Length: 197
Image (cartoon, rainbow, N blue to C red; front, side, top):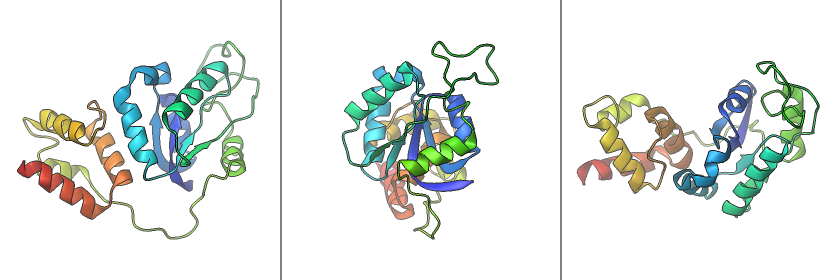
């Protein structure tokens, strides 16, 4: 598995599953064309792009191109890296027939092709020790009443609104995003301040 110093955006859950077997990084999905109307997710991606590089890796078909162009317009920053996969004819194993354009998407691309594309577009592979990643865990959310308690969902949504993150993030996704955006001390400060309001 290759660790990369970036957040990766793909179209759907099968793309995410594919990449989770190749790279060690936070991988987020656009949920296809739903990203066009998801203002909260766009806001979250903008916040992430202020702190970390974002890699956009959509399929090489026309739908992937539409999603990529939309994200490029919304995430206007030097912190966005567009990674393009070659157009390879074929069909994903789980599908009965090939896509309308006949190209493999992220999900169906061989591991080597994905790694080569990341290298070619200068995605930074981490092969040295970087600062420690934040270590927020599920039990921390429980401690602050954000998971596993009677009003946890309501409280978590309030925190997400305050942080300008999508309100529909699960507890596990909240952990991933906070660990990506903030240091341990920043997370502690945010949670303690939130709990005393």
